[in-house]
Image (cartoon, rainbow, N blue to C red; front, side, top):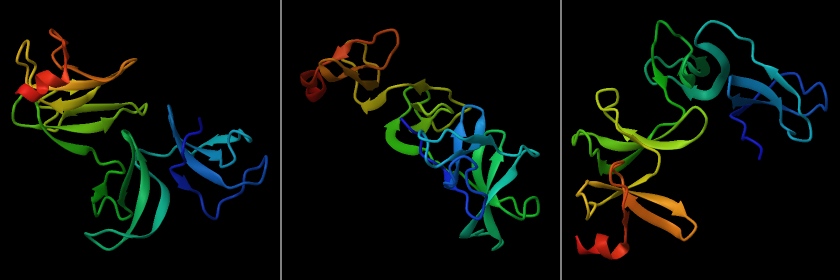
Length: 185
């Protein structure tokens, strides 16, 4: 399965092996240049590593809402992000992937909400939006509800061979919850 490209590199040299357009991709060790005809052409080249927060690409048509300067794609310690080209004078930044909010209250702190996030390897997980104050994390889709056995205030959905099933989100309980049990409450 081919990974999707983050951005096409315009006005850059073509792939030296096949002449196709080079694209910026994100890998285990950070971004790199790769041929757009992957897997037929396997050409890859690391991006020039500069100081932390180096500019990867100028984003045409996107202006900084604070100062009006062009926005740029940067590679930082924690991955790629969008920032103002006038840094450090203007410190405006934006995330590429904003976490998806859920309406489900965190069962651990009872004041935050669970948000969907992606690990650096692309795996989806759900955590409290109050991180680092609350470090609640689950790897399965959360579902509002209460476990009938232990009364834990959160359920999770897992894909099984019999289809999608709900379970108690508590690691100590983990009991399956039937649809009839969730309707009764």
